Amino acid sequence: ERIAPGLTPHVLGTVSGAGRMALLREFVEGDLLSDLLFSPDLSRDRKVDLASHLIEVLRLVWERTLREQPADDDYVGQIEQRIEDVFALHPALRPLAASGMDDGLPLHALLEECRSRQRAVAPAFSVWVHGDLNANNVVVSPSGLRFIDVHRSHFGDHLQDVGVLLVSLIREPGLTPEVCADLDGVSATIARAAAEFAGAHDDAGAASRLVLARARSLITSARVVVEEAHAGELFRSGMRELAAFAAVAA
Image 1 (cartoon, one colour):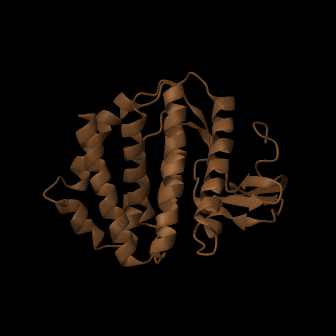
Image 2 (cartoon, one colour):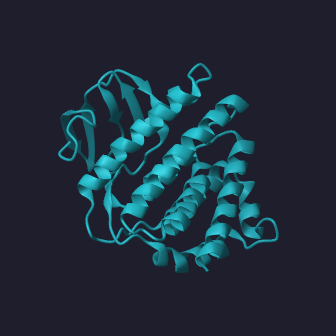
């Protein structure tokens, strides 16, 4: 609220007890961005316009909060913290992680390879990030975009938000080929704008770091996708992106 007044719902009250806190927030009229982007009835141009508007808002926040202090987001650590939740929902993925795929390294070895390299591509600056920027955490209201579920906000790597956002566009199973084609255009718009921001701030490691950010979101998303085949597809894509990051950063 201090950074960008009106961008998040107002907190109307809080109550604490037994080490927990609950809050009452303003109700925001509007549509979830995910519902609009996944709709077969909305034109591709309109979806790209929404993505362009979102990235403009994000860049405004990034520019306003940029500080010359390295971001310390640990993508490898985030995967390790959530991987057991993935296996709890989809135990069939555990053998795949243990054996590797496409004659590649198993997951634990891939993570070690990436751990030794992620610091080399870390940005020299940090910005205020949402922390869970799924497309269903953005409301398109009559007054403009509003962000919800911002309790994970922190100073960090802008590409963490970008990676989460991009993966949230492919996390929904059962989308039609036409909608998927629309989302390809949306993703390209977001990725291009993120690259432009990185270039403007001499972030030389951004391209390879986005691969790692996407890998983190792909693998951890499997813990919230119930449909087994789609969760497996996300998980495999994440392992491939980890391998790609390890190869590019080597």
